[in-house]
Length: 549
Ligand SMILES: O=C(O)CCC(=O)C(=O)O
Image (cartoon, rainbow, N blue to C red; front, side, top):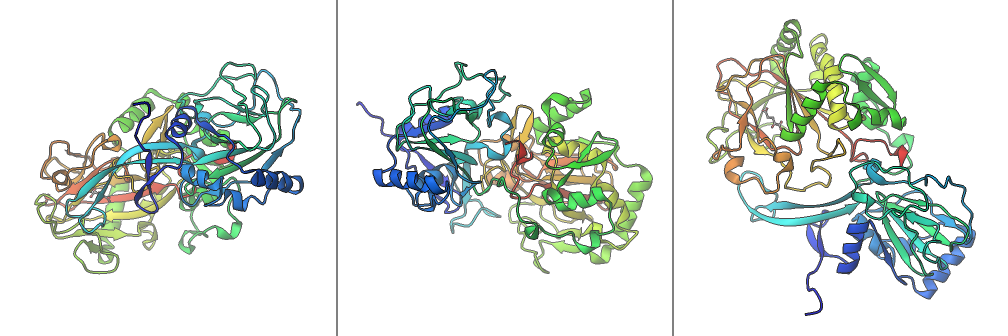
């Protein structure tokens, strides 16, 4: 046998099907290992001529060639996925262009800081019921899938030849997966490559591969175009009119609270040292990076907390609230119980959550529904005051900034008001069901990469070992196998941990990624928990600003 017989296929998130790659096995292998690949003579003579002509007047107008079905666009779709977009204008590099760059340090883009343009390649499990719907109450079939998405891709079209070592494009092979910042690299470094290109070749380079266009005089003519996946934030900010406006009820709030309601749209990020919070411009990359930098652990306690959160997927912090604050928050809930709604009992709008209430085969979860009081910030004053005090609290902001990075918004504010017999919740979330790229969790170079929101649950009542309430599977944010149905229903309890908590403590957990749920409430005293979710919007799959790209 002189050839291998495997095929490469990837799971298509949009069509929910396995798709065979249009790259050859060798090209797939090279791109994955090196972070770039040359497609020799991809362009026909007519396409090359059209590129040259087009380029003499304008560097754009590549729609046909780079559209979904175009000669180049097919490859972009393969690597970036459905819904890819051109990101910024095409750049023309003329033959023999001379570059002004410091020979001791090439101005490279990419590498570990390219968090908004990651190279994602992961395996996971996709679960379906017999009717094809996603798994809910019943068990079902799981299939293993591989997802590859290059969130940023550079397409380099060779309009004329460049000999090896002369190409205006420099790349640092394999740097797309490096976990550490690169040292300064000179043109002469053995790690730097100027690939040989012939007119009509197309080089595809992951945006996270260290690269730069650095002409040095003898190179050929290039057209360089950037593309991004649908999950990546474009270089150009969205138009002002696309931005959601602040809700009317929030107009009288402080700037910090408003920034958290607006998220990335506020143009400012909230930073904190644990005792105070302050606002910084969101496009100040250095400031926004600092909050999440692995190299700036202010205190040994921070390091211990980061370790615990990374290891378990959740973090319990005790003693955040004093008694007066706790009592005021609990009294506010009690004064508004007429607004509460029982979820899971099939009554009322939006009550489709079948993981609550009466769950067949789940005796420790099933109960009389989950009593939720939504909209804590919107309660009539002064009842909303104890919850608005939680929204931008330094103890939360300081931790969220290293958990997901600055620039998130709050998307949920609900009180859980269980009484004895109220339902728990089937276990849900986990790393293995890749319903959404980027929800999986990774710690790279001391920084968390995830699109999962962080749930922050403020405890207003004690939770003893037999009381029921929050349970979690520690480590499941990194799990490799699907969640067995017996664990979802809490019938196989081996990996499940119930978390007793004192009132005044706060539990943080990766709501979309760590497997969690709740036992039925068993205590005679009511449960009082204020539950918030903080997350990035779709344009910011990862936490850090794109301005450093
Ligand atoms: O009751 C709880 O603490 C669990 C809440 C939960 O699982 C959720 O809201 O997703």
